[in-house]
Image (cartoon, rainbow, N blue to C red):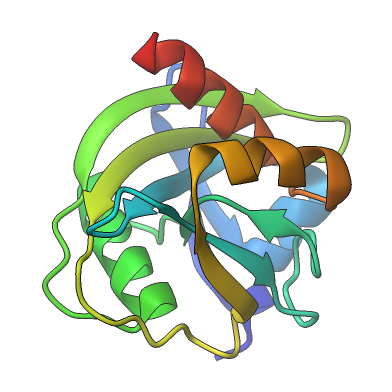
Length: 167
């Protein structure tokens, strides 16, 4: 299915569903919707970092420290977190745990971001339609890369909030 045709729930400022629309329309009209972000750590406590594929509708060819994506119409945040993590990492049986939620707003986009963390100690097989490079980096390496590589805006804001949330 064409990602622009996927049906999403439209929500209000309190994250209550007020309607539905196709993803392409949601992006064009800057409609408020829902997304999940999953920070994935390996056995050595490094973080999965990736570059988004060129075909992505939002922010292609930028880097991110979170896997994730939009929450489908009628789908819970928790179910979307498992689905997105498993799809993008190419794994089965991952169990993300919830951390916090925030509203991301930019001149072009707005969505509720539900942030999770998961540990995966086995191999990953990232979805090539979503990810064209990946690696596991330490937090110090990520700090350096944030000044060198183009990172997706919502993921950068989620990373800032994650670091603040952790204290």
